[in-house]
Image (cartoon, rainbow, N blue to C red; front, side):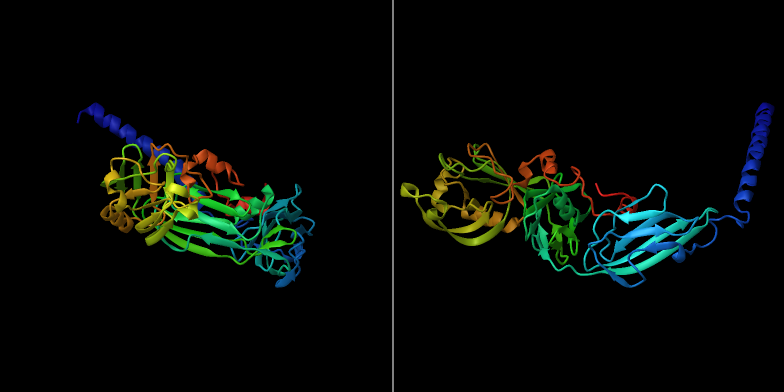
Length: 421
């Protein structure tokens, strides 16, 4: 190394030493004694400075009245309020501008146990704390029951979650209360939303299909919540779901073939026949509802008579709609498989192919019909056509902000101090 390089190195080293000196002083200052810092000590007991209309510790209160917190000391102000019940539901509230009063802005749940934490601050910056436990009286009123579906188990990636209510909910405000209390969590996490089918039924689905091998937990936290005068939420329920492999079938009514994909790869192609003129199969995506090894199909049950009537025993029937659309074995129409559409709306195939399909799919798997002259599969009312709605349209059916699921107060700031929107 030449002389100029050595000189430069010495200058760089000296510069670094000078730059480190203020840092060392700063570190010394940070490690100094905190005596006199009002934040250094444990919070003082502010019980005598905070009044709560819930009474003393362990009291039972009427949930029809709002919770009120008042700073009674001359100097102390309310810094923070958290009220949460044993179900994990935070109570929303509003703090006055002068910091002396707080009140809840959503009703207390009936028959619930709450823990209230109030933080205070005096003029010297010292922090105070009051903690109070109380219960609310049970409500003597009608109960809103929630039945979550499907039953716990493993399903295909297209399976929606459903919630059926025991009473009709009409107003937007009441729907927000209900929807906010219906919690869906998944691993891996995916974006999803509820949509209201009508006043007594909701469906939940992700933006796209569930990922394969997803774990899903669904809970109702509606117990004790006031929905409206005379109607409170009933006991909480929950269920656990899983998804299997991603199984998708695409049935081409024009090409007269069905391709089945497993996790994105085509694993089987089969010749089929679909609905003939006047009985065209519905276009669109359908979620498999169930499987029946043998079913008696009678035309009278679907309003078909005259020369088109039939009464057949059908094997390996996989149901797609409540009105009677299936994928099934149709040996009587073997000459039409891959050649012509000859059914009354079902997707027929050989007995061997129908048995294979039956054994390799499960409820929640997907069958999409394309290139048919039939009507479009409706989103609701005839099975699960949920995936025929765009994500934008789906979100419009939510009573909450589009595309979000407000879990009822997991945001502490919103729960503690802000009024409900």
